Length: 504
Image (cartoon, rainbow, N blue to C red):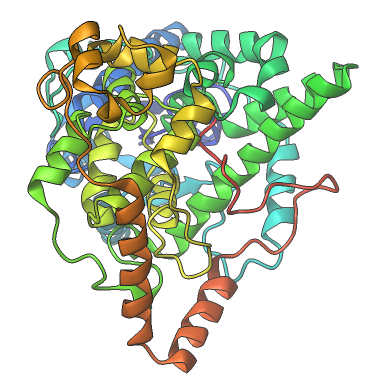
C-alpha cells in the first residue's frame, strides 16, 4: 500500500504539504498526469504546456535526488488511478486544492466519488490563502494572515524507491488548443523562479511601485513571478515570508513602500481566486445578473483585429504583440486590452477572456475571469472603467519607444505623431514611409464615439431591470465576494484600483 502524491499546479517539493504529509505515512509515489481532455479546453495553450514541461523536468530531477522520481502518465485521471491501485494498492491520495477552470472542477468531483467508492482516502491541502469551504468573508483576511505566517513544510530528505521512472520526451508533446509559439516565454521551473525572486527583492523592487503602469518599465521592474506562482514552482507562503524578511531588513523608506505595495498584491491574488472558488460559474456567466445578455454576439472582424494586434491604435497593438511574443504583460495594459475589447469593440467578454487566457503564460483562472469581468463592467459592484487608448499611450509611452519596438511599421515616426498616426497628412505619410490603411491600419473604431455608445448601451440595458432587483443582486454580490477588512494595519489598495494581482 502506497501514498500517492498527485502533482497538478504545485510543481515543487519545498513547502509542499501533500508531499510532506504523504512521506510521513509511508512509501510515496509522486505522479503527474497529462490529461488530453484538459488540453482540448478553449483556455489551454502550447505556452502553458511548455512552461509545465520545463517545470516537470526540474521537479523530476529533484525527486530523483530524494530517491523516487516523478511518474508522468498520460490519459484520463480515474483510469490512471485504477491502474496504479491495481498495481500497488493505494492507501491514500494526497494533493493540493485546485481552483481551476470548470473542467478541473468537474474532474475533481468525479475523482472524489471514485476514491470514496474504492475506500481510498483523499487528503487535499490548502495551496494559497484560499479557504474551502468558506461560509462568508467576515474573517477571511485574518485566515490569510494566519496561513501565510505558518512555518513552511519541509521537503522529505529521502523517499523510498518504488519503481524506476523515465520522463517521456516532453518537448514533443504539442497538446495545447492554441499552438502559436511564444519566443519570449519565461522558462519554467523553480530554479528560474528563485533567481527572479532574489533579483527582485535584492534590486529590482526598489523601482517597483513607480514602474507598474508603463509596460516597458514594468517588464523590467515587476517581480515577473506570476507564472511561477500559477504553476506552483514557488509557494505563495514562501514568497510572502521572503517579502516580509526583505521589508524587515530594508532601511530605505521608499524601497519599503515598494515592497509593501508588492505584498498587498499577494493578498489580492488570493482575494480574487477565492471568488472563483466560491462561485465557479464566474468563468462563464456575468457575475451581475442585470448585465446578462448585454453583449450577445462578437463582430468576427473586430475580434480578429484585436487578437492580431492590428486595431489601428498603436498602444493597443503594441501590447497585444508583446503579449503574443512574451506571454506576459503588466496589469494596467492587460486591463486596457480587456476594456478596449469589451467597451470600444463591444465584444462579449468571454470571447476576449479566452484569447487572453491562451496568451498569458501565467494564466490563473481565479484571477483571470474575475478581472475580465471587472474590466468589462459586469460585476455590479465596481465602477465602469473605459480606458482611453490615446490617453494611455501618451501617459505610459510618451516618447513612443515601446510602440516603436513592438509596432515596427511605425518606427520612423516622431513622437509627436506616433500615438495617433491616423492624423498624418498624406505628404508626411509619404515622407516617413507609412501609408495608413496599407502599412498600418486606420483605427478600427473612433474611440470617443465608441465609448459614448458603450455607456449609452449599458444605461439602456440596465434601465430595463427593476431597481429593487438590481439592489438585491448587488448586495448579494457584496456579501459573497467583497473584502471585509484589510489584512494588516497599513492601508491596502481598493479592489478597483488600477494595478492589482497580476503585477507579480
